[in-house]
Image (tube, rainbow, N blue to C red):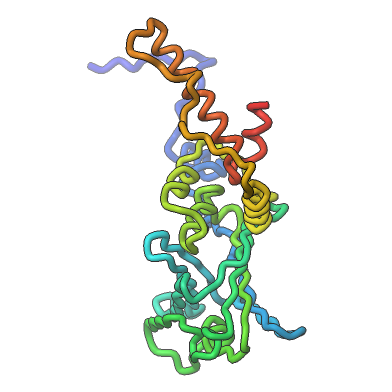
Length: 283
């Protein structure tokens, strides 16, 4: 014989499966709600000619621009992707490969919104050749009765201007701050492999707003010109005699650590790519 357990008159009722389902549906943080994918801001690119009024936008609302930099091969790849709005399985991709030996690096700037603005120049020698000495790759998925207008091909590859300037704006959310800066500079042979490893390995890096590579290069050139002359004295020993440590010293470890800290601060202060936040902390 079964005995039913008596319930307290003020005991809460056991929630049912329907109540639990209603609670989960009303909660906006529940996984059952549809979440739109995060869309990163689009890249913007323009190409300009030597005369006034010669400017064409390479970005458009129907397509997606993307850029990749090859630090080993010293080249840059620009891709334009057009998805069919009716059938997502159909798409068109146009890619252009620009080699550093055929393109002149002009400047890399950090804008006020901490996005990067890359400026390149295609000289008259490369512009005289069809395609501006760029490698073209096209991939079509599906059949298009009316092929879309790809600006990367029509306005850049087929452009007949005697000289061209390309500007690409990379939003902050599409970059990795100073790692992206190091990658771009290495791809166009503006820094050495050693400097690239040092910049890419920097930790606690600030944002890139205010960067001007051309101004930094001009300042370095001015310092080199100022330092030239017969009165310039070069240090023969890379390490000062004050911090040289003998094997018999008792405080060897402490002096080595002190010398390492001094040389590290000297490197940070002398590096042209060191953000101002680092210099302010050391001062």
